[in-house]
Image 1: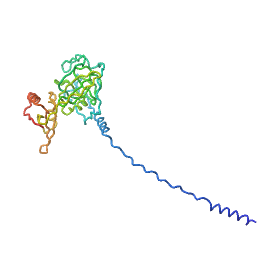
Image 2 (image 1 turned 120 degrees about the vertical axis):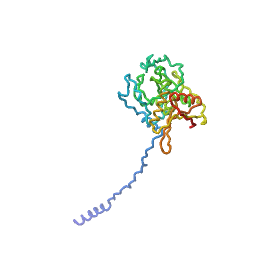
Image 3 (image 1 turned 45 degrees about the vertical axis):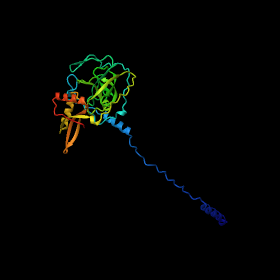
Image 4 (image 1 turned 180 degrees about the vertical axis):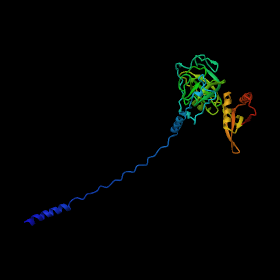
Length: 314
């Protein structure tokens, strides 16, 4: 009886074992391959904005020895061009507005270097031609006459007699290049110069290397949209003339002469580097000049004791 009972049970057990389903491993889907991460190169605009920010961070260090007893800069403290150039196409020109007069900087009369100046009641109708200069890192980050902080990377300017603030259009006479600036400072206190431009404004007019240029300054009223100035007729290469004042084997000597000429209100001064027989030579030159300007400049340089001048077409 036990054999007949166990045999069916054994058969059932074996059947169960042989019929157990096999474990099926699902196919492993390979993970989709992702494209390699790419780093996009900065756009031209991003690169220009980054460069502008770098230029505008440069500030000249100052100490008490930089000043006279009256608070003015000592004569031997020179201004400086920041390292690099600005892309002025990224900067916004100020829009002329009817701003209230500043509490500071409008005292009239006032005296600087023993000379008295009278501030105009209004900028309306003001128009003048003369020499423009510019100022840079020496004053960047410091207070202007209006107590605003001078930002060399904004379109601003210093003027001796216009009310603060005022808005003017400055046009370079030889090229027609133009910029609108906000007057928020006093200066320049050099005879013959009528306006001192920020580094940004000078950059837009292309005078940061020459230091000065002949310009026209016209006051703008609130809401006035300045019409672009008429561009002068281009000067042919045959009509361009340059005046070589001197040449030096030391760059510092060339820079000193350039500064001397600019202090005497000589415009369009620049330094040209050349190599003669492998040796560097720095030439101090003025130009381009028209026939009338050439005669005037030569007379002025002779009065300064500079002789042996050479005239060339390039």
